[in-house]
Image (cartoon, rainbow, N blue to C red; front, side, top):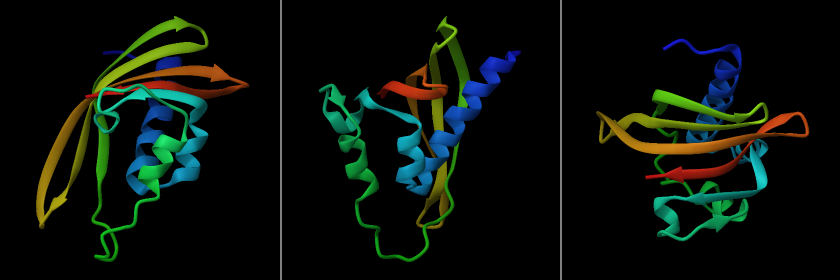
Length: 131
């Protein structure tokens, strides 16, 4: 599928956001988010969570004490973009996360829909639905 320049821009923003998650980089992740970010995720148990404190909790959990984390690769398979306006887009894809589990490479997948809106000159994710 051919992507336009604006498609490629939002895909790059989303990829950078995903990479901040796997690095555990809260400051970078929060920079991609609207303050009133809403989400439905497995961790919300079917309840709409609103605001960044819900997400920050997961970034602040202690590590496993095993030293440096194993490398993690995250990517988007079959991204689909639906532009609602020049400043709003719905991005849906299958998220693939590759990592080592007891030394064995594994790939986990989930489906995500993220709504991005241009606010004050920057793209911000305003809603996430992950399953």
